[in-house]
Image (cartoon, rainbow, N blue to C red; front, side, top):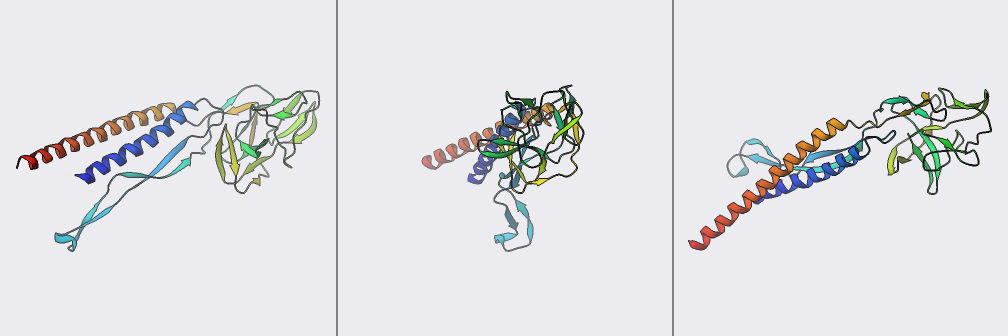
Length: 241
């Protein structure tokens, strides 16, 4: 009986963790270049079942519910949307991220929605300077700026700088920013000028998963209530015997 309660409780805890991840994904379904998160689960407390006394022939195994194994990020490419903005750039393919300089140091982002600050530095939407292939800020002289498919920035046809696109063990740190364990400069990045990458969250799929998890949570809750009622009846029977 206690094993059943443990299994149901574990299922409820796992469902709650998954629901939190789904809610975060849905909240960012319209965030530029957002990558959805997921959870990987494993079976907890797997017991091997054997014949009489536990010493006979193996008859299989019995799990006690799922436990969180780890969190992962789905890095598949989101929809590429044309914007017509000459400072917007999307990365094609699931590899690569732009480098920006933040107060905490160099960070990496797939969000290529860039603009200019009063000093005409190229910055992201949070005001962080965008860096070139040498990790230096890009200053744009007056004129008509335009990126090409390799990340080279030209102003009125004259080369100014080239965006740095990096790869190497990214980990999310919030606000569409990531750290990299071993950043490596990509020699031949594939970019789409005047476009932005959308989120790779499928809102319909996430909603379906949320409905299923809500049902699983309710089922586990009813199981615990049933176990509690059975235990209460057993105690009452023992008292009256």
